[in-house]
Length: 97
Image (cartoon, rainbow, N blue to C red; front, side, top):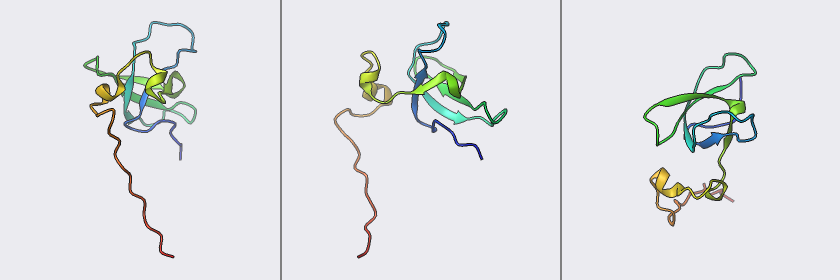
């Protein structure tokens, strides 16, 4: 079974280190993982909030966006529809001793 580098819902952008080509500006959300064409070629459906359509992107073409500071002045909390000051608490299971 092939492991996927990106998960559905993850924020990605096109890799700027690739050969300069006309690329849309991100960020993009991974909408779904498409069935692999071959073992070396994973494809994702990604969508930007600024475009009304989804697009295909090969795994080698995109990179994960780690933090808001990684993008030039983007307001990530607003883009994601979340409050920047609110972080949901995660509960951890209690281990019996």
